[in-house]
Amino acid sequence: MGLKKRISLIEPDNPEISLCAQCAALSVSRSSFYYVPVGESAENLKIMEMLDHQYMETPFYGLQKLLSHFRDKGYVINTKRMRRLMRMVNWKTIYREPKTTISDQTHYKYPYLLRNLKIERINQVWAMDITYLPMQKGFMYLTAIIDLKSRYVINWSVSNSMSAEWCTEVLEEAIRTHGTPEICNTDQGVQFTSEFFINTLKSNDIKISMDGRGRALDNIFIERLWRSVKYEHVYLNIYDDGVSLYKGLKKYFQFYNWERSHQTLDYKTPISVYKKVA
Image 1 (cartoon, rainbow, N blue to C red):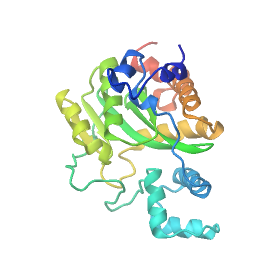
Image 2 (image 1 turned 45 degrees about the vertical axis):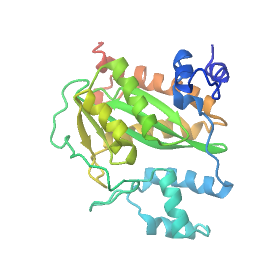
Image 3 (image 1 turned 90 degrees about the horizontal axis):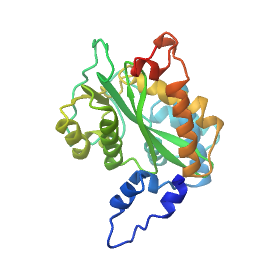
Image 4 (image 1 turned 90 degrees about the vertical axis):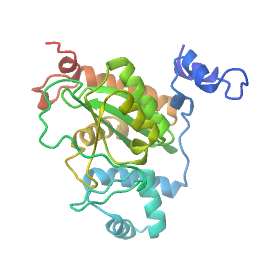
């Protein structure tokens, strides 16, 4: 049974069976049920798409440089609007001094544990992050977990919101299917500093590592994954709806894990390193 058909069988208002139970029975993640792209005005969507491309070229641009950049292109945009659109695409400016976006100052920030750490085995370190995906009409978010030794994509999911519950669900599924890593590294976004996410790591005895704010090299592995996903697939296949996006990404990650060789892996595939297959 296809994903779209299974989703159509779900009754969100059913008083006897919860949405969570229905999704579990049909093998559909809760985030999959909400495969509806987020809408915005046509101009805002265009700016967001341009921001996404621009981040790949100048991740060090801050608010003022972006305002100048877009005004030079003829857009009438103020600070409040630009800040909002930067948040929407999860723009995280790289600064030499500590600086970031989308961070809750009331949440505890854990230290970065990967500096000078030699990564020698699979499931030693997982990294997780969220990125913005432009669509024909609207946008979605993608989150993924990669094993840093093998570059293998452990788990991934798309959603129309960046919720802590969604990220936690993806992490829990990764643990069920691949075991537990020694360390999990994320940025300092509110999703990853939330009680839901942190408690899942603690309950599984996983050490918590977080990127230093604005540090370029702390999240370099996951940023390379986003660049590959976008330039090799997303930008070439602007999707109309969430279900087709899901299907396209499923094929891409199958290719990424099983067929795409990596120079840093001596031109081996991630799965061959993760599963130790010659």
